[in-house]
Every structure is written in C-alpha cells, then in structure tokens.
Length: 458
Image (tube, rainbow, N blue to C red; front, side, top):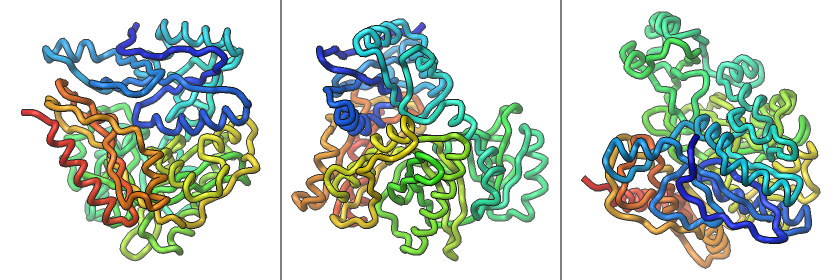
C-alpha cells in the first residue's frame, strides 16, 4: 500500500472541502470550482489536491502527493528520482491509501457530503462508492465506455465526416489488415490502440516494420485509419448538460509532434469563420450523442482539416481537456462579469442536468487575448541541474493582457526541479505563453523551451 510522498494540507474550521485527484498540471480549474461552490452554497469552500507529481518544490497549499513507484525508481538509480505512473495505477493507489481514506472519513464527519473533482473519471477511483461521496464530473463507467475509439467510430460514422477506418481484433489481424492496405493508403496509416490518450499509444505507420517496432501486445483491439496529410488539428472544448444544452467554450489549434503526440494548443484558431462554425456544429452533434449515452460534464473533440478545407472527425475525449484552465481564463476576461465558468457549468450539468442562468458563450475575442500551451516531456531519462521557480500567476497574467497592462507574458509552471533523475515520458514542465497576437505566443513558447532545456544536465 503506497504511503504519502509529501503533504501540507491543514483543515480550517468553518470550511468545507472537496478533493481534486489528478495531475498538478490540471490544478487551475479547481480554483474556479472553489469560487463557484462558495457562491452556490454561500459558505467558505476550499479544496485538497491529491497528485502523483514528484517535484523539488511545492508552492500549492493543501497538497498530498502519492506515487507508489518513486521510491523504487530512486533506489534503482541511486539518487533522488521523479517518475510518472499510469493514471489507473495512481487512482487505485489513492483509493486504497489509508491516509486518504482517513481524510475522507474526517471530511464526511465535518460536512456530511464530499465532492471529488477529477481530470478524467475512471472506475479505478472508487471513493465515490462511500456514502456521501460523489464526483462532480461524468460517470466513470460511462466515460470509460465512451473513451473507446472503436466505440466512438462505430457510433459516429453516420453523424460526421470521418476518415476511412478499420477495426482489428489483436496484433495478428492488425498486421494482416494493414498488409492489404499499404498499396491503397499510400500516405500512411494511423494505428491506435482502442484506448489512447494524447497519442501515447498510436503512430502514423508507413511500413509494416513501424507497427512491429511500436506494438508488441497481442491482446488489445486496434483502430486503423487512412492518414490524411494536413496542416490543421483543431480541438473544441465543450460541456454537456442534456441533449439540448451543449456549451461550446471555443476552438483552439493543437500542436502535434511525431504525427500523433499532442503537446499543447494555441488560441484563437487561425481557421476561417466558416470552418469554425462547422466545427462547432459538429461538436454540438457529438454533445447530443454523448448526452443520449448518459454523459454529463466537460468533453473535447479533435478534428483535422485538410488542404482543401475538408473537416474530418478524429476523436472524442469524454473528459476535461488540457486547455480547460486557459479557456476559463479567457472566458473570464471576455464574457460579462459573473458569467458561469466551465467548472460551474460542469457542476450544474452533473447535479441538475441543466446550465445556470448566468451561462453565456464566447462569440468573439474582444480583448484580443492570444494564448498557447506546451507540455514539455522528456523522451529519455535525464538528470536535472537547476530549478525554475514555479509561476502561479496565470490567471493574473490573462487579466493584465486583457486590460493591456501587458503585451505578452511567458509562464513556466510545475518544473520538476534540480537534482533529480527524471524518468522517460515524465512531465518536465508546463509552459503558458500569452500575447496580443499569435507570433508573440509562439515566440514565448520557443523561448521557454530553451529555458527548460538549460536545466537538463549531462
């Protein structure tokens, strides 16, 4: 049973709490949820975060870090280590952790009801089985079913324009099917396991050996589709309350590396208004389908737009997007004061299956707020030689850009810190760049990447 790596939480009197369980990079929306719940319940509400991120410094209050593999990783390398674990293992560890369960019982004794907020609802987090505990977010079993790429493609093939695809049961069938397609799908074949987030279990293959080098497991089902060369990877963030209430937060462009790997986003999209309108229309269709399936809460839809301007559906993420915090910040500065932010919309969607009266979509970008994000990951194990102080002023920076107090800004957040052996595939840091135009944002992202790279030792 995993123990606590770090903890600094303190319970205050006359305060009710909710728990955030997820990665530290998705911490931001909890602040908006705290404010919404305080308003709804007319009392002081705060939150305690349970994360797996092993960092040199923690500047967040009320934090608990659980990582059942970090001690073994550190012993193996003979020095302080930082590593990530699969989300399902993390959630199982949190659910069974005696310290967490004691905290949950303490909170229930104080306040009778406890909410849990998560980046993605998964069955492995089972604390909501306890009486009085519930999730502000989609039902975990429904989300798990909907996040299957195979289920999505079969359900949506008559709803939206889609690329030509096949479903393969196991590795042998994958190889047999692709062997028959190379001569026709000459520009590449997109290959993905049934469950793949952020492109981690997918590739664009150009020959049989690409598949054999990447996929070894006979068991998973695979989705393959014809790869279409393109320059635009738009993503749309929304919230589902019911079949008729689908909220669209906005459209951003994704940064994709190595053909399939998502590393960040940039807003606003450079696509033309007509294309954006179609993307929003398609996303509302997806939202209606999700609602019919019983889904309530935040979701995202990814698309591609080819050089001829044709839009193709790629996938639904039946969970929050990594852009949730940035959309909250841009909505806060572009919408009338008091408008519901995304966590408040999600609360009403889940609890009441409707949106609150203060709901308004963002139709324009009147304050010319441009933002971009980049998740810096290391692709092999590295040593760190320096720490970049954590910047927690993201919300304030958005306000300054909106009010023309700043023309541009760059924030490096959650840097792992110096003196670590950092495992391959870890989140090294998160970058948020702001500006009044797209070029300033891109320049800021590139500048921050170089700063982060300077902290990697030999």
